[in-house]
Length: 244
Image (cartoon, rainbow, N blue to C red):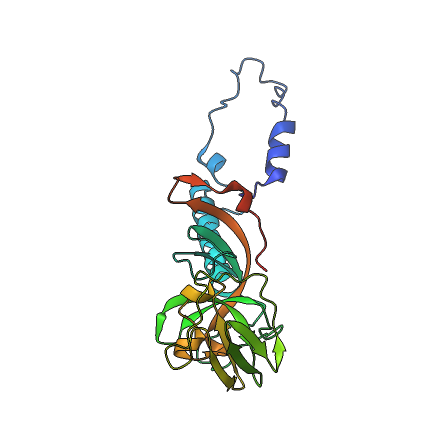
């Protein structure tokens, strides 16, 4: 934020002229031009130091409000969302779109819309709310989700898999793992079912269930910075990329 400058005071100072000598004061010396203590106090009576402190406090409060209710930055530490998100991507999350939490209020307020199919969301991990997870919404309340030989169906329709990566070409039967054959399950109202885009290497809803709407922090918007830890260089082409 820019510090506000009292332009009225500046313009008046610039336009002031040295007072002319009054009649009968010909012998008087030049007027004392030493700045008085009042020169460090603006017209509202606030000192410059106090103005800076107030500006910093206001900026901090605004930053906290923005982080709590509007937008928040997150870093990707694992590869469960490859190829959509890479380890070292830094992204901004819209916290307003699904509404936000208020103290002593159970439900979210000012909800613009609920999560939809294919939204990439950040949420509190149901098994440990102190951890944040990021996954893609595959089913919402009332949807029937089923996985057959790695293909995902919602309400009997095959969903788009253009953003999905499979690192293992093998198919695991349902009796061995939920990875490639799962369901069918019906998503309860007030919850969503999520999967990682790196489908064979993602710890997601297949293994721990559903995400409550109240535990969703927001919708991923775009990548504002990306760092390749292996090469020690930024991924400049990923900066500014929207998350779809």
